[in-house]
Length: 339
Image (cartoon, rainbow, N blue to C red; front, top):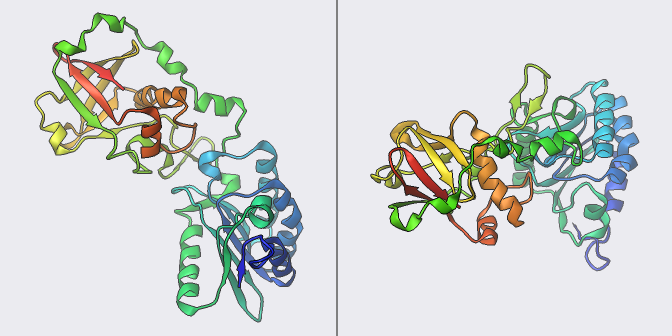
């Protein structure tokens, strides 16, 4: 059976979800996004199932990295506290070892387990408005695969209670501080017009090979979150944390910097830099890994090519109009850096 939210192909998936909640003794939903009205609609159903001894779990796959509105975060936290107090592994969870964008629904009772897999988020648009494609799953191979996948999604190395996660709320001072470029203003400055790059030898670092690596290089933010001893919560990596990794073709170039060096940027900043690791392959800002990231991502954001808290991809670079960072060797350990 198929549900697409259109009359001609299965109709509205919300009606199916409502029916399944009525008969369910346990429920597991893993969705990339959720909406506040749908949370409120099924809030009591989650509690009822958990109160009767069943497992009631909701995984929100994108919240840890992209954040939640204040109302949604408050409501989900309240629901999780209520469910967790009842035991059985019930609760609201978030993925903190990479973004989860899938949509899986599992409803169980004494008679059977019902699985639904497709594109419908646990949201008003996903369940009723968008043209989606969600199907019931019954073959043993896929069912076994889904069971294993859900076990993987909810294991402690991948998911944590929303109560234990530091979730950013757009519009707050914490959010503004996370995406602020103010640290760049503390750097010493110079006049780029004093540098004639046409007289300098050039080394190119292509970004095309690292842009789509979701948990490294330009996208360290989307790597695994880290536990804070201070707050007792899982924190995302700093949004601007960046460490570029150069391959042997680049590190073997005589122009490649080895150790500490100073970058004079094309927009007038002077950034202390260093290369380290095997073959000096790691390129980073010295002292604060976020400085280089603020410079690179700041340019992308200001141009409109990159939205805060979203990955840098090849499409981002295409929209920006550049695919590489250029290092021009000046005298000593000084480089003119252009992006």
